[in-house]
Image 1 (cartoon, rainbow, N blue to C red):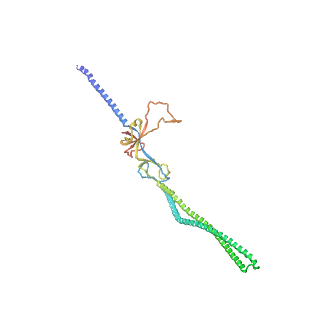
Image 2: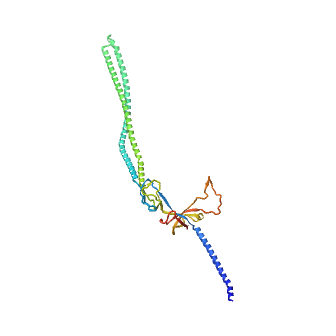
Image 3: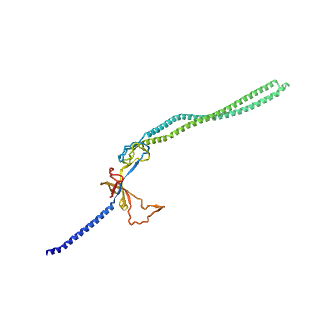
Length: 406
């Protein structure tokens, strides 16, 4: 009897247990679905990726002048501060070049000083030459006037000669006419004496007029010679003036060489400064494979400097996640080598282009493959995240990182 009671009671007791298990199972499934939905929503709202790497700016250090390395105080992978000496090129050739440029500049200045002193004398000479030119031109004008006066005097003297000659001829003819009449007593002796006196007076006037004519012609010739002399003197004075002005132009040519000499001095000084190269910023030295004694050539890199002032992470996000990534958003950063450290970052930019896989071009036309993929893989675009609190001792270019955009 008791056995039958126990048997009849067991199905009733098993039914509540089965219902309880089913309810628990449903609750677990619903909780899992709810948790999956929350995780999916969080992942969608806060995109994360482990396809990220650490980056930093870097420059190749190359000399700007050539020469032998005489000092190389830095080591490979060493940290240097801004202003620290990286290497020194033998400065002696550039010191000599600077001394030569300074010497040439001083020599030019001495030439200019000497030329200015010469100019002072030449300026006086030029003024004297100008005065001489003026005087000679005045002399030419005076000589011309004297020639005109002498010509007029010659004309007057010729007229006087002609007049006195005519008078002499007249009185001579008169004497010759009355002389035969003296024997016939038609004229008196006194009349003959008067005629002889008139002839002698006319002869004296004629001789005086001839002498005056010769004197006037001599004066005319002398005035002409003075004009020629004044013209020659004017030409000489103008030549002296031109020579003085040419000397002043030569000084201007010397002065025009000053910028060229100064530029050579500045260039030589700059080359000398370039023999000592210093770090432009705090950085790590890398890729150094040289030693003291190596010959440096302009433009040939010696090693690389990694700029430790700014670190950033390039994270490649699927294009479906970019809608929730915006410039200025905060991001959590983790380094693969130090997952226990969280760093803060800020989204600086989102890439706008990657090379498409189907971007080939053949003979000027797009080359499209004759295939159809049922499953399309989303492209990844680079997101640049600046690290706000980097630790230069932990960050290395190319290190793997994990980023979560909040």
